[in-house]
Length: 123
Image (tube, rainbow, N blue to C red; front, side, top):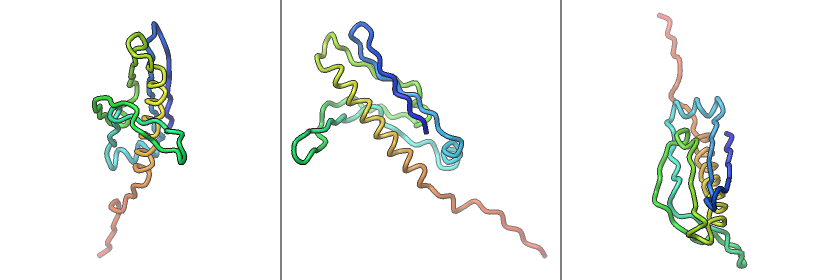
């Protein structure tokens, strides 16, 4: 799975775009077991550098569930003219969604087709 994350800034708008390219094997798994869901919203965390380091809630976006392959081309924008933390939020958003996609893909890859067989009987 290739996950390309493009971060840009234009007129103080911080954009994070995701392009997802499954491998042929992953596409076969998706065709067998279904295209898994990814939430491009929800709770976004950041790493608190206390000892020990822990993930803490940073901000929340409305849930935005999309199919894994349907998420390609998704762009989330953060407005720097109204939010002084827009750049930091964009960075944490990219990290969170990349981690979520990675987890979803690992779960997809763990699927095993124990059903498909060819049985031949000679009588």
